[in-house]
Each structure stands twice: as structure tokens, then as C-alpha cells.
Image 1 (cartoon, rainbow, N blue to C red):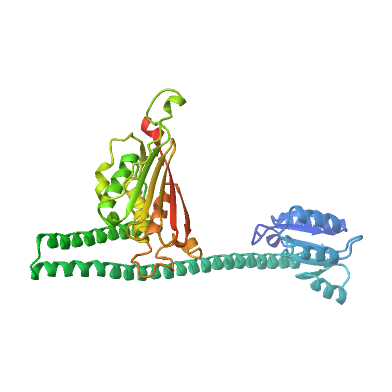
Image 2 (cartoon, rainbow, N blue to C red):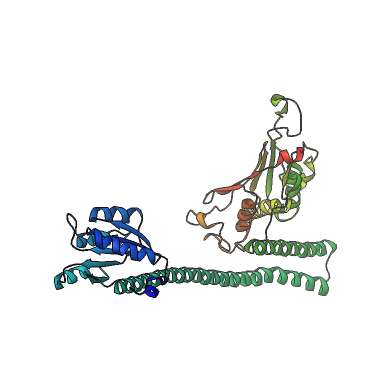
Length: 429
């Protein structure tokens, strides 16, 4: 054998299993392939070969056809049935040059056929050829997987682009529609004040109408900006110490002066544990603070803000969004003069806010979609709205790692319960 041919480097660093019950051929092939720097393993019968392939699959198999007990054709048949080994190329070796052997060798999955006695140069060339083909096949499979992955990523990107386009369209439609009505009202009121003689009371009424519409537009703009931040992933939790009891009372007072002035808001504040007191557990349990009732504008000042403190770390801005949106919905979908229950319960590790109305209720088929952006229930008729309020509430609750639960019955009302985890221990540090 030519030394330069004998010492050449293989195209790929590969493992080869030689299966032959004739030891002279087995050792000859093993010696030559080892010198070519292939990793070589040996098997002297079909059962041994199957066990070795199962435990450590080689890159290529040289397989003798004529073997006792389990011949090469049967071994190859088993290999091709096994998903783990079916792709391994098998080169058959036979001492009998029979056409039927060759036909059957290829029919059971062999990739090539070598007759004994064989030329080593020819065997090496065939081995390298099939190893190269196998390597190209693996590369093609990897490329197909990469292309498939890229196609899936592209498909998701296109879907996201379509969703974004739809979102932008809804967004533009929302802003143009929701801003047009209050702007028209403001313009009409301003023209009336300019061109007609009004009594002082009538002027104040028109000015209140303008102020109300400006407030509505301001709240809408805050919702839009908050929604945009949430969609862009820029909405972050900014914790600060807040007295939850006084905070809740102030929100209800402000709300009663504006949108809620035609409704009766029943506010109840409960504090289950005296968070800041010392002593043992019994001493820390305080009385309930109940029935801080606010039933009309005339009773706003009846609420005593000098109630017990319940200070905790929350995001005040996001919490305000949660409560004002829930109150807005309760008022919007309830008749004038109806009652709304707003309850706060503060415990050692959480705050529970309950907002309950006696309004139109939410159809059962709409309830799973309420927190979807721009979604509105089918029974809202001509009641104005953006479909953003509850979506914003859900996002603000999620950022606090809290929970929100809704229950509703048609024509009987809706209740939202929000639980926000508190970071009270951090204040003690």
C-alpha cells in the first residue's frame, strides 16, 4: 500500500464499527482505519453489533453479510427499524459475489457493497465518500431545522406586526372618537358663553360642563399614555409609602365631586391588624374600622380622614389607576341615584379592594374577554367607552403581583375584587 495514501488524513473525524466473524479481515480493516485516525470498534457477530450500536451509535458500519446466528442482512433490517440508528450508513462486505446478495443488501437499507477480497484503497475511498455524504446530510437537516425555525419566527413576527397594525388602527379610531365628543361640548359651551347673556348660575353650569369634559379628556389621555407604556414594556413598579386608608377616602371624595356626584358611594374601610403597634399578637389586633359611609355630595365632609394609619409600600400612581377605573365603570354602567359599594380591607400582608355596583351586569359570554384591550361587552349599547379601562386595571394589578376577580349577573350588577400584596416589613427597616 502506498505510504502517502496510508498516511492521509480523513476528511472527517468519525467513528466506524466493523462487524465480521472472520478475524483476519476484522483486524486488517481495524488496523488500516485506526492508522487513518478513525475511531474503530469491533464486533464478531450480529447480536454484539446491535448491542454496541444501541449504546454508542457509530458514524458508519462495515457489515459482513455471511455470519452465523444473525446475518448482516438481518442486522441491517433491525438497525433501519430503530429511529436511533436508522440513519447510520451501512456498507456491506461479502465474500460471495452473488447478484441476489447485492440486491437484498440494498433493499434492506445498505448504501454500498464491497466484495472480499477487497482493495483497501477502494474501501477507504467508499468510506470517506459515505461519511462525507452523511455529513452533508446532517448539515442539510440542521439547515432545514434552522429554516423551519426562521420561518416560525418570521410567522410570529408577521402576526405581531398584524396585531400591532390592528392596535394602531384601534388606537387612532379610539382617540379620534373619544376626543371629538368632549371637544365638541367644550366648543359649544364656550360659544354659548361668548354670544349669549347668561345668569351667574347658568355661566357656572356651563363652566362646570367645560371642566367636566376637560377632566374626562385628561383621564382619557392618562389611560392612553399608561396603555402605551404597558404595550412598550416600559411600565415599571415604583414603590412608595402610602397610607391606604386615607388614600382610599381621598379618591372617593374626589370621585364624588366629579363623575360620581349622581350616585351613592358607600365606603367601608377595615383594618384587621394594627401594623405599627408593638406588643404581642393580641395587642396588635385592633378593632375594625367600619361604615365610613359617603352617600351623597352633601356628606363628603362627614368622613373623618383622621382614621388609623395603614401605611404600606405600593405604587400610588398605578393604584390610583386601578381604583378610579373600577369606580368609573361602576358609575358608568349603573343608573343615576344607584348605590356603589367600595370597601377596603387592610391585613398584615395584603390590601383587598372591593367595588360593587347594581348596574347592567356583564353577559357571561363577554366575561372571559373583559381584560382584552379595546374589548367591550355586547350590552353596553350607546354608553361611551374605550375598552381600555379594565385592560389597564389588569396590567396594573399584574405589575403589583396581585390578583383581580370579577363576578357579575345581568341586570343585578358587577363586583370586582382586587388583592394587592403589601411590603409593610420593608417600612420597619
